[in-house]
Length: 368
Image 1 (tube, rainbow, N blue to C red):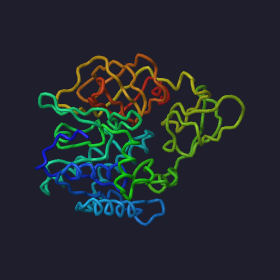
Image 2 (cartoon, one colour; image 1 turned 30 degrees about the horizontal axis):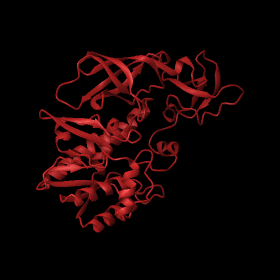
Image 3 (cartoon, one colour; image 1 turned 180 degrees about the vertical axis):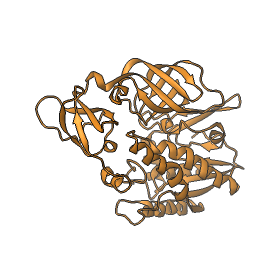
C-alpha cells in the first residue's frame, strides 16, 4: 500500500458498509494513521423499503469501525443528493438520455459534501475505497487508473477537480479485488464476504422501470426500424438505452433486436437487427459540460477514450468546439455510444477528465 500522507495527518474514511471501504479503513489503521470514519446517508425515500440496504449498510460500517478501533459518524447528505444528483438524474431520463449518477455523486457528494464535512471537522485528507491511484508530479496531483483493470474506477472520478484530488487518498488503487477480499478475511472484518452492491445506489435491487414510474409519467409509443416500419410498442423512451437487447419483446425470426436510437419528437424507439448493425456504431461524438482533473485542459490531439465503464481505451482525436464543448473522432467506430453517458480521456494511465456525451453521428439522425 503506497499512501502518501504523514502519520500526523488526520484522515477521514468514507465508509459504505462494503468490503472495499472496510479494507481501506483497516489498512490505514494498520499503517498507524489517525483515522475516523463517516457513513454517508444519501437517500431517505425508501429507508424501510425491502430493496433499500441503507440500514444494514450503516450497521456493517459501524461494526467494522468497532472491530478496528475507529470512531465513526453517520452523516445525512440526502438533501444535497436529491438537489444535486437525483434532480439531474430525472431530468436526463425525461429528455431521453441515459445519465450516470455515480459520476455526479462522486463529484458532488463524496468529494464535495463529504470532503467539506471532513475538513470542517479538522481532517487533513479523505480516503475512499475506489480502485484508482494518484501521483504527484512537480506539485500537480494526477488521477491514475487502478492497477486492477477489471475494477479500475477512474472513469467514475473524472469530474474531480484539482483541489479535491489534493485532499484524496485511494489506498486500494494498487491492489487486486481478490487481494482486498483476502485481506478482509484475514482481518476477520464483518464485511469480508458481503456481496458487492450493483446498479444505481438509490435504486438498489428493485426493478428499474417500477422505480422510475414513481417519479416520471410513462409515455408509450412505437418501436420502429430505421426504415420506419413499426415492429412493436415501447413503454416509454426513458426505460431504454442504446445497445439494449433485453426487454424489447419483438418476436419473429432472425437475429436479435437492439435499440439504436430515440426519435424524441415522434416518441419513437428505433431498433435494428444484429449486434453488428452499422447504425449501432459511431465514428464521432460531441461532448459538453467539460471537466478536467488538472488546471490546464488537455491540448487537442489523440487520446485514449472510454465511453462506458470497463471498456478498453479507444483511440480518438480531440477537437474543441468552444469553451465547454468538444468533438471526439474515433480511429475505429465504437459500439452503442450513448448520449447522457460520459466520455473520459486518458493519456496512458493518467485520467485527464472528459465530458457528457451530447450526440453522436449515428444517433443524431433519429431526432429529426
